[in-house]
Amino acid sequence: MRYSTFAASLFVSSAAAWRLPDFNWGSQGWYPVSSSAVASVVPTKTAVASVTHVATTVVATATPTPTVVADATTKAPTAAGSAATGSSGGLTADEQSALDAHNNARAEVGTADLTWDASLAADALAYAQTLASSGTFEHSGVSDQGENLYMQSNTDSPLTNAVNAFVEEKSSYNGEAISSTNYMIFGHYTQAVWKDTTKVGMGFASGSSGTYVVARYQSPGNFIGEKAY
Image (cartoon, rainbow, N blue to C red):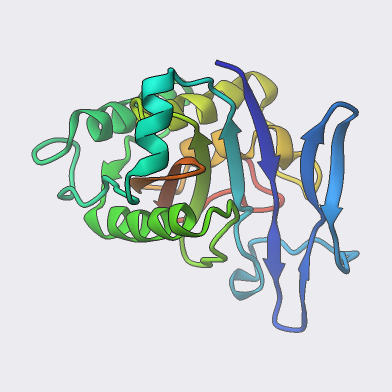
C-alpha cells in the first residue's frame, strides 16, 4: 500500500486568526491549493489561549478488490468508535489493534500509553459519518482536540491501517521542534506520540468515495516550538 499525505494548520490568537496554505501532492511534489494571510510571528504555548494544535491528515491510496469496491459504494455510512474508555473490554478487534499500534509507537520514544476514550470516539465517529455523507475530506476545525484524518478505498481494518500510516512518518522525524513548515512530513506521527496526549478515540465511516477514519486526541499535540517527546 502506498500512502500520500495532505496537511493543513490553523493558528488562532486573541488578536487575529490565520490559516497557512493547504497543500496537496502531485507529480511535481507539494503545491498549495488555497491560502490566506500568514502571520509573521508564530505563537508559542506560553500564551495558552493564543495557540492551537496543528491539524493533520493522511490519505491512503490503496486499491481494493472489486467486491470491496461494490460493497463500499452501495452501503450507507457505517462506523465504529463508541467503545468504552480503557485499553480493553468493549473494544472491537480493530479498535484494540489501533490503540496497541499507538502505544507501541509511544513506547519506542518513552511517552506514556494512551487510553481509549468513549467521548473522543463518539466525536470521531460523528465527524467520520459527516465526511462519508458529504464525500469531502477536510478537517473539522475542532480546537480542543487533536485530529488526524485518514482515508482508504476499502473497508479492511481501517483504524489499524490509519495508525500504521501515521506511524510510518516516524522516519521523517528526528526530534526537532514543530514549526509552521516542517509538520507536513511528520505531523500525524508527532500527534500520535505527543508527550502530553493521554487519550485517543477513533471512528470510521464508509461512503461512496471510500472509508474515512477520524482520530481524536486529548490533550492535543503539535504545538509550535515544542518537541513531540
